[in-house]
Image (cartoon, rainbow, N blue to C red; front, side, top):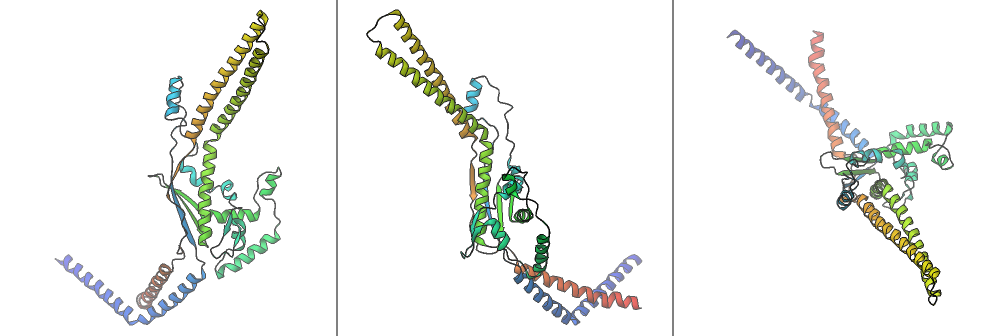
Length: 359
């Protein structure tokens, strides 16, 4: 009974402190208004100083490549007694697509993409656009100026052009800065459950954002297409060239046989007969080789077609109408919330901690 009464007494005391604190807060509401006004002004200045950023996303479902040979090719291989169990999924799975997009080899190939702004006042390469036409907040200009000064004082030690002259691949300072900037502008993600690939591009101009999103998708598709069909294309080209050589050999052998028969049609001797049979057999052998290579060309063409990946576009690149950042309303609400927290903390310290300490 005594414990219950003590607990009730503590609750009443706590409730009294809470009422006292609420009363204090209400009596000092001018502080909240003052803090809120300051926070509102600061938030408005910040959100209108940050340049608008637009985003565009492209969603596509890549075709799964479980086997290099499937369907009719697997049936033909089994009929030939070949075991294709070891020929499994290719090295570039869907989960590696984000790594490919973020790589230096991929992003640096986007430097020369031609872009134009919605107002048509910018028409240049993507690298020049990122270097010369990017807007920044007013508080970022001192750091940008200092960075430009440091970059001008330090010597540059190479670029991608040196690699084209036989030197090793090396990014210059400007190219490295562009590469790092593009890492935050071009993003790729894969849904681990559905396998859907999402490519998102952020930019300060909506049309450039859309152009780059579409370009990234097609460049990635071409990259994967070139990788997956490289061996099949090489085999097809090699077999096709052999088939063309065999076709020419057959036509030459057939021409020699027809010419010999036509020129010796009125001569009946064992030597002429033997020579005619030899040329006829040579023509038949050339035709047999040609027909076998023609079948191999058709087989290689089928393999090339099956190795070609197919992408199903779920959502194409559309020009955004509204900026994705900054979130003006959320930023203002966040600053107002922080102003309330700061005012409450100040009053709590003033009336409870400071007064208790003075006592």
